[in-house]
Length: 230
Image (cartoon, rainbow, N blue to C red; front, side):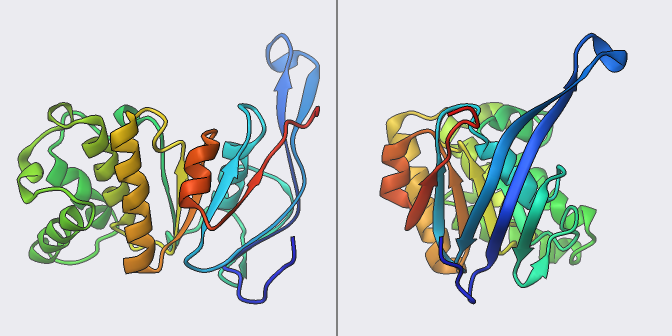
């Protein structure tokens, strides 16, 4: 894939493997290649699709971009070489499993405000205003602030997850199988929300899915990863 000087993400010759041991810590070390010699470039405000069968390395590539696992090769993000997890939070991730992403004890307003509190961003009044703005941006009524996770539909929960990921104003959002647990109608609404967010925020989105129809509908470009043994 030809590299553009305006790319917000550039991946060069990236390879990654899982390391495991048979029979516990003292067993023989086994190395299973997952990604081999990946080269990609993603433009600012592009929705880029990653598809492929289970085990082909889609989520592994996302974790490499986030700086969560070791790899060989080079990743450049917004002109800077990636070196571990991004402390500026320019990249955030939305997962398939909303149940494990959202604390069921807390109210939705608190869940959205928490990232701002953790990073000491803004006074209380400013944080509340940002929560209200984010609820509107992701298509939720302000009354959701006082509700808990179990009171929301699957689509509403995913909207909360997306809103929470955007509270720190990242430049890049990675959506990992974000619609796979939703029905067709709710999934289509989330895809349209991603389009709206790209348009309104100039957001770069990496959309990971085994659903090739969804990738073709949403994404400007995309690649299909193959299992390392293919």
